[in-house]
Image 1 (tube, helix red, strand yellow):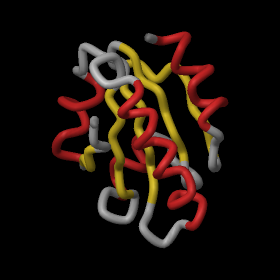
Image 2: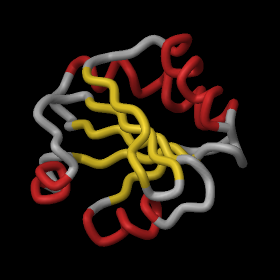
Image 3: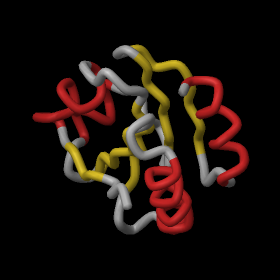
Length: 107
């Protein structure tokens, strides 16, 4: 089962922008209720798309500069990246069906 990896400012370029596979990034914080609701959905997606999609998390409290650089105004914010470019962004808790519909267009 694929795991959702926690990344930060120091590994964002390598893990997301330079990734050869599409990446779903969850910008979250431990105190955020909706973030906690979406976490199991992201774990399912990471498992379902293992090898075709990477799922990572960025704690905005620990990485405020990165969150600012990526234009994060509220959390949870989920962003899909392909070949280093942001191709889709979702603000707020999303259903698995909603996310899968967008992911299917990328992978």
